[in-house]
Length: 170
Image (cartoon, rainbow, N blue to C red; front, side, top):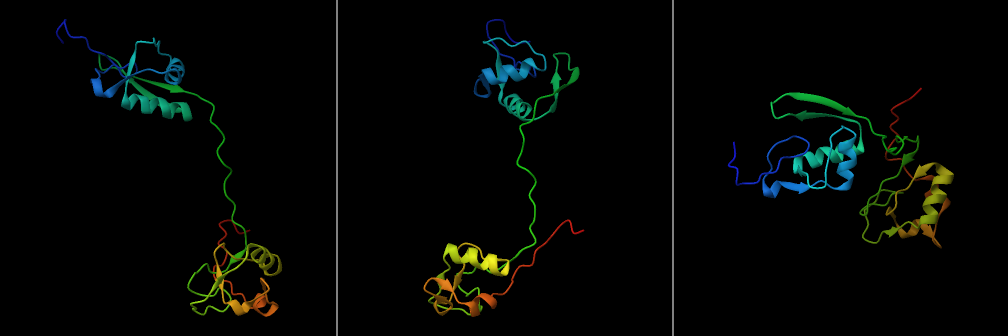
């Protein structure tokens, strides 16, 4: 038992004694989460850093929290919160792509010291005509480009490097 002249602070969530470097006052967002458990929280209550992390996680998703009492009894309380919608699952498209090398031409695969970057408009044209995705930053020999456009010969000789990997083939 601590001496009577020393003031000590217990965490509002786990009821453990807090060190001065490990405690903070309960803010408004934490109060809202703790009221859902239900725990009565006043403005003078403090919370440990571990419990602050639990509050943050509880705010973001549905969690089960273990609350310890002074008599070492454990209660499990579930908080249901509305989850914010996450981004939709990704979908793999059945398109091949060309190489994205700065050292080799994506058309003829030759190394070259004077390769030029393919313009964005030409990358779109290659995709529309051959259904091959040319990544941004891909380079080719200057003789494949004429007036900023890929020649028809070069267009038909673009090689597919990466085949599509479909997870759900039906």
